Length: 263
Ligand SMILES: [Zn+2]
Image (tube, rainbow, N blue to C red; front, side, top):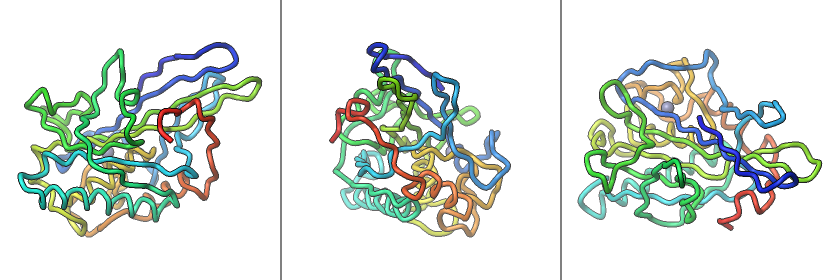
């Protein structure tokens, strides 16, 4: 986690924390897991308070997909896009949040110290991209490691906190990414259902982008590894965590200047 203060003065100030969480799938990874059935990401505010890292569940969250590396044919790539749409549909049902697919993109989310991914990501709140780590043009430095190789996927978010006048510090997530290692596509069966599926991988990583962390319970989809188990989607703990992040927990009123470059 990194935090950088980029405030504009004493009255208006915003800062960004970028969090990315890797999944090692389907290989076993050393888990930094919670003991409960769900765990929510938190952020520290400058006044010392710790808050749950939430998006504003009352806004429409747009997403784009870079599926160029999911297959050589249009139908293969469209099937991958449909899986992403199916995953967001399931997340919407669990959170009450409206997600809207706004098209494809060629973007590879890519972090850098001078101009981070979220400042360049102006076409959608969340970008889901399959990446190829052997070529510079398709590589990302956001994909986590797993042992000597790469994790199958990583999801993360950017969280801004701000202060307006004498109000207390507040914060909200406003950009997210999911990157998936295309070299490991063969480990995941297309669609949803039992076992290690592309759908389960997408649900797991989108869960990270919305603020779910890993848990130690193998029954949950947020366990760090997608298992060959009978779970076909979010389990009870995953769903409880998503409810805590979603509309039933209330809106996060966010001034327009905080995440101002998307309508
Ligand atoms: Zn994970």
